[in-house]
Length: 476
Image (cartoon, rainbow, N blue to C red):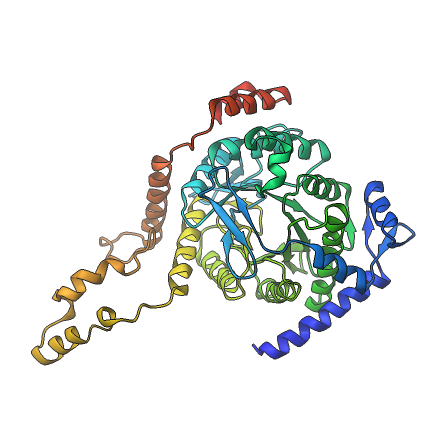
């Protein structure tokens, strides 16, 4: 990779995005949004809004680009900037891949179980979103039900869910209950609002309503264009990235028109595609390559970016899943994605989550954290006296005092196997046993975080009022 060539390409893509915004424009599917643009002097023709370079620069400069988002327990927080990496759970899958490879629909019990696992994992300070889409919760309340479950099962930073205006109001009402009202909520970032344009160059009513309400509460807006080259975007990466970038810039401008200074994140997601089938493909080098340029564009604008993830097209926890996931997470760490969606559990091109894959992905993240640490160089770690002793007097380093003193500082995997297996033992079976052992340990260690009984009662009553079954409320 030639860094200078990358930067030149980023500039060309940026100029192409400006041309798209100035000559093709974006369709906003909301009278309210269109009136906001009209009132502020943006050109509108035939249902499309057009942007000048000066307008883009002006409103990008207004946005709050570095900020902190706090969980219910403020010991859990993430710094949003262009330097630090924060991991978020898998998101959006309707299915579960079981240990034996069979596939089933995800249930609310799965959502609760995963919320517990992500709450227990030290490398994750963010929880929630659509950990899985529970098939046994009514569609008209499933979005607030998932946020409600996260609020009760975890005290970490909450990742949001886009939806219809009623869903968004239900979510904000619950956040008001937990955090002491609207004005208190406006003072501090608590909830990452996800707003997703629809490629090519459209922003639908749900994305707009979600964005507008998030701005009303001064919560950070994560604008996420998720195009698919060859399907919803040009098959060539340069064109797909330029179009995706234009979509995100246009929505970021809207956030600043509504609430100048509102915190924003640049949620880049340009997926690969299988042109033979027309399906998304997320374990490809093309996705990672697009993510490189998405991260560089975000840094050009001074924005924190989303990129990468533990992504795989594999149909199970296989060697393919390991290769694709490791490559995606390596890119994430190399280009300093600030917010990493889908960082654990994803399989089958977003279609499924796997408990075992969550455990393996936790370990991959731990490995990268270890790799990223600088080595300590001092008299103890250089160990010259120990080297002299063994070299001159003979023997082995294994029984040296220095080794005994320092050996516990070396990396120890949580699920990977390094010891010899019993004769005839299937290594894949042994690995699955190790992964499931860690699942059991984390679930056994889980303690539901404390929540004021008055607040908990208000949350329960709110969900009962909007139609959640008493037996599901009791589960939470």
